Length: 232
Image (cartoon, one colour):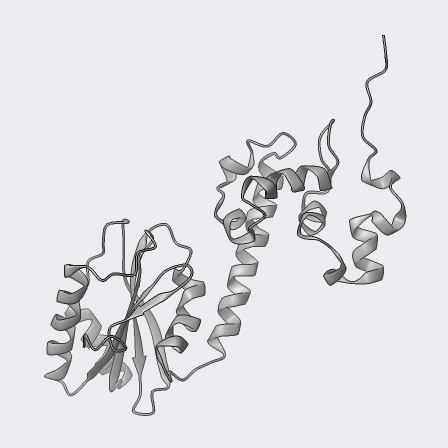
């Protein structure tokens, strides 16, 4: 009976091809996505090296790291060789990457356009599977005083508390607001409810001499600005 062929373990590879050693001597940029994820999981299974396993995992999401970050712990564990601990490690690494993107965007503390709103809020809202409604509070120079999640709901919508929004604005001494929420469906077209809450907040804020400058709908790849489209 012929002996079953077992793939070489990574530790038996040429040192130049071992992910950890490659990173150590050549730097992070020299590694492929699969090699970086292989470092996270450490080992593969009886039939695959860690790199081969991570290539298969990445292949399942068309080699898209954002899509990889959306896989749940249970989904990751469907791959042979990925137990709970490895799945959690991958999920944690993906979350760190997302937060790093958010921190880089936060360095911009002044709103200059709808594009700057997207740059700041996309890392927070762009990949969520549920809808969230946020308020950006600004001073009279359009510098950000605070970003505040106002509500969190299902994929069909959120509840927005106008009184809570304006109470926070008064406490912060804000002179302007920007409304932001995400559409998990990916559609950029504002709903009737989106238009109604925009006008409701605009009217209420106006009575306190607070301007609502824009309402920006965020998706993973793009955005819709009420101000840009003359719908304010």
